[in-house]
Length: 111
Ligand SMILES: [Zn+2]
Image (cartoon, rainbow, N blue to C red; front, side):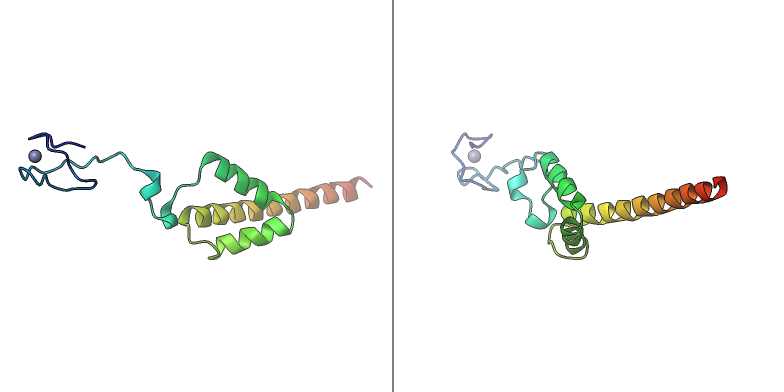
C-alpha cells in the first residue's frame, strides 16, 4: 500500500505515513472474515447445512445439539443456531403429538 499524499510505501497496518504524516484511510465496510474473532465468526452456507444434518441424527445428533445449545461452543452463531434448532424440534414434537392424538381420537370414534 502507498501513501495517497506523497506516494511513500507504507508499512502493513500503518495508521499514518512516516514520510509526510498523512492519515491512512482505513478501508471500512470491507470485513475480512479471517480477522473476525472465533466467537463471532459466521457459519458458511455448507456449515449450516452440515449442522442441520448433524442435529437431525437421532440421539447422537440431539446430544450434540444440546451441548452446542447450552454452552458447548464459544461461537455465538453456532450456539444461536443450535438453540433455534432445539426450539424447532420441540415445536415439531408437539405438533406430532397433537396430530397423533387427533388421529387416535378419530380412529377411536370411528370404531
Ligand atoms: Zn505520505
